[in-house]
Amino acid sequence: MSRKSDGKVGPLPDTEGLDAQGIIRAGVAAAGGAVSMASSFSVEDVVLIDLLQKVAPRVRVFAIDTGRLNEETYQVAESVRDRYGIEVDWYFPECQAVEQLERDKGMFSFRQSLENRHECCRIRKVEPLNRALAGLKVWIVGLRREQSVTRAHLQPVERDEAHGGILKISPLADWSERQVWAYAEKHALPINGLHRMGYPSIGCAPCTRAIEPGEDLRAGRWWWENPEHKECGLHR
Image 1 (tube, rainbow, N blue to C red):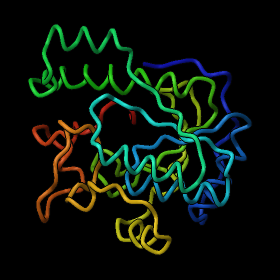
Image 2 (cartoon, one colour):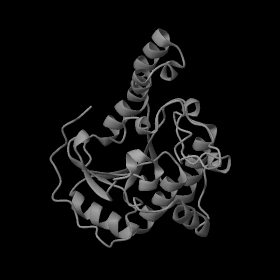
Image 3 (tube, rainbow, N blue to C red):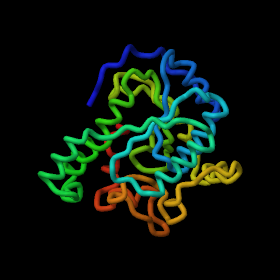
């Protein structure tokens, strides 16, 4: 669902040759207004929170509690909150919409068709995201190009026309998985326990599984679907 913002930010900043911290600085400087980071508390997101604390500590962090997250995600969220002394702005789905979905279609309708899965994601993720982004000029995310075919052309800074033309910053866009883990281990960052169990991608518990050796990094997300469909609507 598209929304009108409070006015588009200026031209996209030039990020050529900038590292992740430089991309953050350039994006925040171009914002001219409120900036916030979306976190699922994956290793990428914790790395990004650590970087933000170094170069842009006033940027707030928000998260979406779909009602079906793993306990390990809540645990690392609390570890991050304690380590950095930050508040996490949690957003929840509208309870009436969730109640109606489960009353009409049961607890696992998302496995019956792509349309049903998109409906569940729209209720549990996209609608809360729209509220989280209201009034923002920039949102920051931990996406990387090598994560999936749907992210292969990701740019460090893009205009997000699906959300009123605000800027979307992906400081880790060109980072490899090896780089992410090297940074996390060097700085002894809190790590989501699911990663240690073979989950490179973190999502809702019923829609995420561990991957097998040699599988794509997002093979464990909606594993019953084709790779080109593996987005939930948060990133379009």
